[in-house]
Amino acid sequence: MNHARWWKSIWPYLAPRLREPLKLLPLAVWERLEEIRLRCRRPLSICGAGWQSWVGEGGEPTSEPGRALVVEQEDIARTVELITCHSLYAWEEELSGGFITLPGGHRVGLVGRALVERGAVRGLKQFSGLNFRLARQVVGAADPILPLILDEQTGLPVSTLIVSPPRCGKTTILRDLARQLSDGAPALRGARFQVGIVDERSELAGCVGGVPQWDVGLQTDVLDGCPKAQGIMMLLRGMSPEVIVTDELGREEDADAVAEAAAAGVVVLASAHAGDLEDLRRRPSLHRLLTGGAFRRAVVLSRRRGPGTVEKVEELGHAGTGL
Image 1 (cartoon, rainbow, N blue to C red):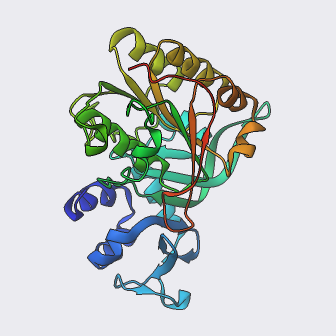
Image 2 (cartoon, rainbow, N blue to C red):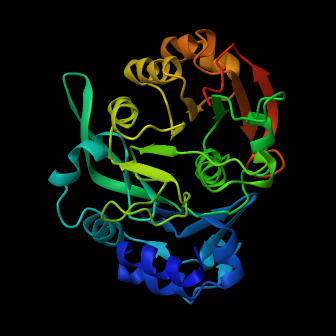
């Protein structure tokens, strides 16, 4: 995504008093920017890999919070109105999860007073902070990962679970893996695959009006905004994928659907939030995936040397390529 597209995709959702100084940030800052943080009565904050800064009223980055623009309650209220199109009710389900996904795959986290009914969070109100997590396409982000998901004998991809804490590049890498598998990459020796993406949170393909805004490959079909378990089954029944890509597994029904895809001989590439594999093994639904043969490999990532740092590759089972 070039700078002009950043301009178009982010600005409409920010309160004007915050939008204008952010527009004046140097291009070099935007190229490294990962998050914009709004906290009520606190300085406007931006950060990237290994750095953090405040933003002054004239758009200048500063290390001194006293020189930064202070975010007011009105700025947060106005921004929430813009990201929800003036209808909190229409976004009730997303708010109960603590975030909203914008066109282009940008995720906005929200905090405030939780609305709790029968022990479950039903939404948020009285917002006190927002975090814009900025999505971007990094062509080639999966170059170090692609060889790790290929069978040593056949050179074909195998079902792989990518594991890491937040902000380690899982989604960016999955997006680029879909593109490379679909279009072909040197490591694939000319092979290309029919790829299906189940994009429950509209972050992998960044669809607008159902059309991917990111380059996810010429032979890739996308189910946008569809729950993972249902989407996997829909792709299996209707689109004959050779590879299915999805993000952030966690529910029991997700595990069931992945197991079904593996049984059908389809390669599944997916991600899960965890610090390491032992953390995953303590979660029943994912423990079953790790031990049941649905995934053949797990790749553990960190930010130790920047997003996408490979910490470990572990063989999990005997799931075949299916290709």
